[in-house]
Length: 295
Ligand SMILES: NC(=O)c1ccc[n+]([C@@H]2O[C@H](COP(=O)([O-])OP(=O)(O)OC[C@H]3O[C@@H](n4cnc5c(N)ncnc54)[C@H](OP(=O)(O)O)[C@@H]3O)[C@@H](O)[C@H]2O)c1
Figure 1: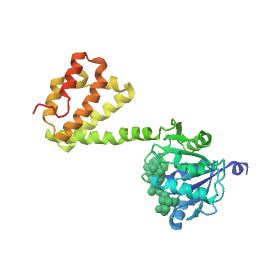
Figure 2 (figure 1 turned 45 degrees about the vertical axis):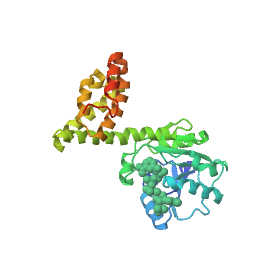
Figure 3 (figure 1 turned 90 degrees about the vertical axis):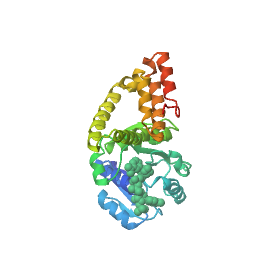
Figure 4 (figure 1 turned 60 degrees about the vertical axis):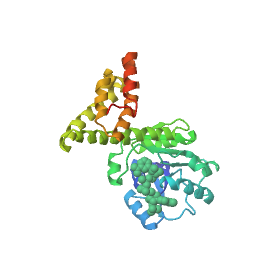
């Protein structure tokens, strides 16, 4: 009975992949009672409640019951509109917490609610919610970035921890840089793999051999750079100041691949600068000039 009384109410607006997952985890934590689960169609809301194992399905923002926390888990482009409609409804209490889960969008998307004294923030789990049933299994340990009104942070830190996440704070205005860092680490790693595989095919390596050779090297290098830091993990011709090898690489690349090679090569040369003398640095700078390769 006491436990029931101490539970916090969580309303979910937009119960898709992320909304359903976080709601089920919150319910299972025993700390949260699921209030309203709102989608644009009642059928979708009912389906979400069945997955979550609780909640009252709704398809309208009108007369929302009070909640300690309200999660806006709608697509990024819908957050500002839903926040404005919620503010207009007058049903969200000042002092309660409303948060969204966008990676790049800031708490400012909730400005009409903040103007009413609602504590507004964003909580972004660095996790891919491809399929809710799988996501609830794999969520534990996920880092959750908090940004926005610091008054909302204690409640959101508690929420993130209760669902198995590990919360951390972002600097004010840091959302775009945070999301850019994640995109570079995740997406550009894939782009690099694709570039390497394309160049390996030029050498006559079969897909199987290339996957084994590049995969082994990429895994080993990733472990090294995570353990040692980028400057110490760097090996290869640029780290050795070997401009001749760099010129031979460039001579066999397509124009598009060469442009990428040079951009990344110049950044790599800057990373290696601490262990190269001035003459080697200058030679690398010359041999990596885009568009100036020896044909
Ligand atoms: N998926 C991920 O891996 C992931 C990871 C981190 C953060 N996020 C963030 O989580 C948020 C939700 O993403 P998601 O992937 O869960 O999206 P999703 O699967 O497309 O779900 C969005 C949900 O919002 C509902 N919805 C759409 N427009 C609405 C509106 N105007 N009013 C009320 N409900 C509305 C949709 O249901 P109906 O169509 O039935 O209305 C659906 O249930 C986004 O901010 C996203 O950036 C997602």
